Each structure stands twice: as C-alpha cells, then as structure tokens.
Length: 556
Image 1 (spheres, rainbow, N blue to C red):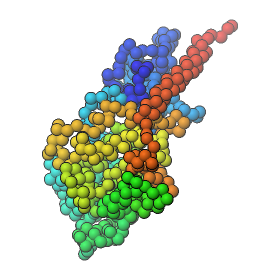
Image 2 (cartoon, helix red, strand yellow; image 1 turned 180 degrees about the vertical axis):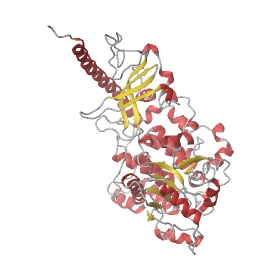
Image 3 (cartoon, rainbow, N blue to C red; image 1 turned 90 degrees about the horizontal axis):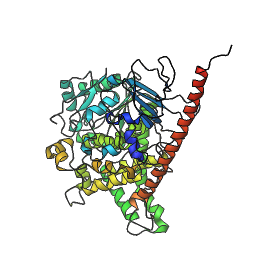
Image 4 (cartoon, one colour; image 1 turned 45 degrees about the vertical axis):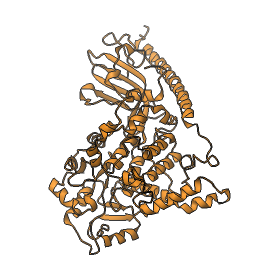
C-alpha cells in the first residue's frame, strides 16, 4: 500500500480485493516470518498453515466492517487457500475479531470507497438483491420477488420486493387492493440477530364504515409470525390520531386493534406536508436576509421547525426501541406511505445499522427508502416548474437530512461522513445538476432512462471522497456503537446554522470545513501509521520471545 495514501484510499483497501493480491507485497508482517518448525518453517501468523499453503499478500492497516461490532482495525493475511483477518483489540480483555474463510467460499469481493471509486458509476451504488442478501433475505420466512417488475401492481413501488414467504403472488395482488395507492407492506430492514423487521406501507382503505379485509389481516399476521421472538406486531402510524381519523372520510384510515389480532397501534404526531412547508417558510424569514437579535430565539421557536424535527427523531427512537429492545416487528405507514413513512424507516434504519452510517451505506439508504419507494421528489421540490405556491411542495427530505445532522451532533464519531456531505446532498437536491433526485418514482426514472442520460450524484461525491469524510470515524477510544439512541428532546435539538444561516454572515461565520477536514485526515493518516508500527513492533517482540522459548533446549 502506498504510504502516502489517504484515509479514503485506506478504506478502499480495507476489504479483501482480488486486485490487491500483489506477491511483491510480502513483508515482515503476520505470517511472513520464516524459521524452524514442523516442516522447517515457523510462521508468526496465529493460524495453522496447511501443507502447501503459502502467503500471497499481507496488509497491516485493514479495517473490517463487522456486522455486529462495526469497524475494527487489524491485519489481513491472504494465502493460496484462505483469507484471514484478526483485529488488534484497543483495550485489555477485549476479544479480537477473527475472520478465517477459505477462498473457495467467497462469491464476491467488494472494495469500499477510495481510489477504486474514482470514475465508478454512481448509478450502481444500490443493487436491490445484493442489499437484501446483506440483510439475510431470502431465508426461511422471507423471499424476494420481482412481481412488480413492470410496475403494474404499484407504479410507485420498486421492481423488487421482500415479502413473507407464506404470501403467494396472487395473495399479494389482493392485499395491494386494500392499501392506499396499492402500497402494501414490504420489508425495509431485518435485525440479523432477532429477525425483528421494519416493514412499510400506506394506510388501509377502511373508510367510515370500518371495512375489513381478511387478506390484509392475514398478511400482517404473516409478518408477525416471521419473527419468532415476539407474538405481537406494532404499527407506527406517523400521523396525529385526529388526522388518521379524518382520513376515514376520504376512504382511508388506520388498522383497528379489534380486527387485527395481536396488533398494537401507535400514533407519532408528525404533521402533514402543508404544516411543514409553512414551518420552513418561517425559518427562511427568521434566518435571511435580516435578523433581529432581540427576537431571534422567539422567531425560531415560533417556526415550530425544531418541534417537528424532534417528533421525527422521537418516532424513530420508538421504532428502534421496539425492534432492538423488545424484538418486536414494526409496520410503519402514514397516509400514502411516501413522505413521513420514508422519514421514519430511513432514520430508524440509520440508528439500527452501522452500515448506513458509512458513505456508501447512506447512499444506499437514500436510493432504497426514498428513491425506489417513490418519494415524490419532483412534486415536493418542484423540479422543472415555477409554481412556488404549489401545494404539493414540502421539505420532507430536507427534514430527514436535518434529523441525520441532529444525530451526528450527538454521536460525532459514529458517522463516516461529515456535515459537508449532508449539505452537498441538500444543495444538489435543488440544483438539478444530477439525475439522482429527478422524477417521482423508480418507474419514471426507468422510463426516462436517467441512468444513461444523466450522471448520478454519488459519482460526483465518490470521485472526491476525502472532503466528505469524518476524521473522528472510527474512534479508537470508543469504537462504533452498533445501535444509536439519540436524545429526542427540545433541549437537544438545535437549529442547523451551517445550512439555514450560511448566507447570513451575522449568524454564521465563514466555514472552511473542507480544508480543515483534509488537515485532520492527513494527521489521522500519520497517527494510523504510527499506531500500526508500534503494534507490529510489540507483536514481533512478543513472537520473538515465544520463538526463543520454544527453540531453547534444557541443559543436562
């Protein structure tokens, strides 16, 4: 590895890659020391070599993204038979993470970020079946289906779904008819340890008369039964209860606990798009172009923006508590399931799964929960029209990014990306420079052939990754927390001045974040090397002492 490589390049080489097998890189690291032994060879690598097994490559500054403990730092050895990784514990009594697999069982190798991403097509960042495999689907209870491949069943849903294995394709078609916009419950995320799931959908079409549908009731029971850890199912309705009741007059509504057995329903009091649009308008007026210092705090409080952000955070934390602590599966919906539902599922998945807190993982999260599941970006942002008073416009996605920023302020070492990364996404949400946020649905993007006619935002970001990285990730003192539980209180939620006030010099000083990030990453790079050298010296000294003890013969 090039000693001057940036952290991004390190991250790129920190997973096993077929093009990293350079025989000239054999060095005095684990597994490369030779001496006396059973076959005349003594090796320091902490595993037993098979007959004829030879080293092919060693890397000493490798980070393995463990699905249970998050990123761990260690050394990688590749032989002509196996891939072997062993972490270097940061604290005494901490057991090392060991990955020891034969090369023959490795189906695919990926590199994360770094130099290999330069020139890489950002449209390929999200592959639905690959993401489902990462979550453990298919399995005994869940299956992947391309039933909606032509978008005929639901034109605002993706082509690939994960659904309970007990539900046949014909059964799914019937269930879809009882859900608003045919958006039936499908899998968003699964806990690999407990099999508790997060599924998303739209409201049921119960109406004022309280209609029932046996297929829909049975389908929710399938979702509940797919989780052997719990005999209940929780429905998180993002709306205030009064709004959900009012929707019955329009043919919608919510699930009755009498009709749906072993189901509990919770209302999360997140208001609709019209309330959020008005709230953002007040934020703009308070932050730019002029401000009254004597009334600043009152003006921000009157926007209710921070209250709305707090409600979204609180809702996500409740979902995390149900899935992680109670091992209960959760179904999330609002009215149509493409605004508040996306906020809650995406944010709760971010809190539950460290993968989504990496650069690539966050890109996948947006592609999956927002783009493929049909958040109406064109209507909510107003791409291609000048109807600024359009009632369909609303800052739904902006609120999600704001919520992510709020979490990053409470857990500043848990995210691979920095504030500049989030602001860049917001800027290009409105710029129309890239095709990522154009159109309303996956079906429309396929019809417009955006993958070939436009460039993805992720191509742009991944080509200059170093300016978007967080120097505090991963932390050598605390490590990466598997599950985040932010404090969702008014005292903890702050106005994001770096975004909303950046054009008002009286409120936000000029930022030089990119340059500061590069400086910190360079310093971290040096510390990486120093720590690694000291660890290797310590390991070699310890191994040398053990070797001397083994080879010494008693005097008679």
